[in-house]
Length: 257
Image (tube, rainbow, N blue to C red; front, side, top):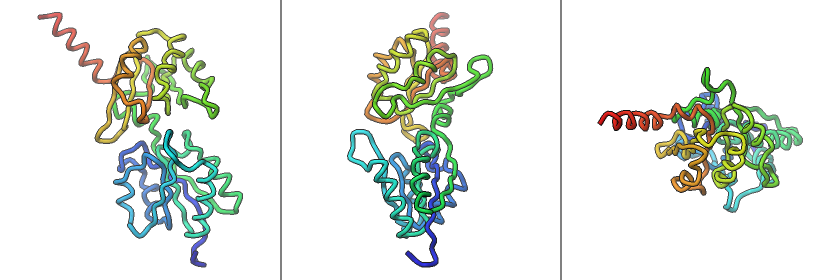
């Protein structure tokens, strides 16, 4: 490392997927990087906008695929900071929403390396929004609960039950593979006609959304690829999705034929 370059790390939230949803501050950080360590689901278009002279190293974690552990990622961040200088750790969504940013910051700072954070647009809000689904709506839902489907040991989070008992909008991340089991838990506390949406490839050109009700979970699951990541939204706000209006319009039209 050049004597003129001091080791430092910037954690940057890349946003929910589309390359143009990173913040201006985040993009400037990428341009000033000496090396970029990026996660899975980071847009290749975004990386291609950054000078080819800046090394870009994949350190993502994907379920079912060989990848670095979090401890290994922590060590790589420190190693590259001492080797290159300014490391930009590029993470999907927002670094502090199930991004394990706190663990990385604690480890890096233990070596005396300063860390700064650039917030990102969280997929928990932006992806439903891209489908016209608000996480809150006056008279419908006054709060929302963002949670991961499972804990470190693979069991369901207690928050899944607590949220199910509430009237809040439920936004569940990393839960596609356990969609049926998740809906069984929620159905113990919410009506079968409660609307649900499954969104994949959020904010990208191939974004997809399947909507229905909790009671239709067995049918819905066959319309998606559960091996691909996505977001589950549960609550009456899902009725704002355009497809529900289309279905209602078709019913009205057929009733007048």
